Image 1 (cartoon, rainbow over the protein chains, first blue to last red):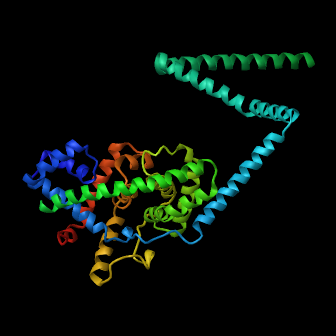
Image 2: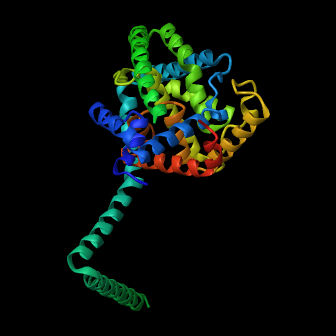
Length: 165
Length: 203
């Protein structure tokens, strides 16, 4: 026993249907045993849930709740007020020192990170352009360059050692 | 079917009465909200006192723990105070607060690993029916609710006990509307299966 409209019953029960659709479904329900069963099952479930401990209505906030909320709001306002006043009191040299400090921190931490992310982007670009082979080729080129630089470094060091001796 | 027809006509009447009441309360509340936006602390205290029980109850239903519920309820009012200028009045002020409370509770629930539901002893002195049969029924329902996963239970509680619409639940929990509807459907289907003998006895 099923009805294509029974999927709409929960929406009707929860008053989620627009008025015209709700009216149409309400006209349909009396003639449809499947929809009647669905609606009644939802109503029975709601009745059962209303017996559960979660349904209590006389459960209230503890005494002094509003005062505690008021105190927290006033404390927050005081903190914000103090921050505002602190910001207002700062003079130009202090702002300049702060800006300098922040720039230094950026150079120290953020700039190397930016460089690292650029190389990551390059790797992604390479993968998009030519797949893994391009990355392998780029890696090989980088290895060759590194090996040359290393060899040159060693040969320079050897020359310097020879000159010293 | 006669039952559902009675439910429908009854719900239309109650909707009309509640919309008139809401209009009167809404006017009074609207004035308080306007005063709050101008920084009137007394108006804010009045709003907190009017809604503190509903907000705390929502948090308690969702978190099943008085300390967490208190924290979530206080955070709800702090968040509401900070963003009161953003309250557009699309829903009632109570619904707006309940939505924020649900969001706060959902954040706390994510941090917790143990899920529970409210038990008889959690709400000693609550307005529950007396008698062994009623107690037994309550135990069955609590145990069935415990078997639902937390996200589904949160949605079910917000719909069944707080009366939030699908859209309000979706906004509170930052979920797509379809997800809310499907999770609610699954939660109800599971409960109907778990409570089948119990539901047969209800008229």
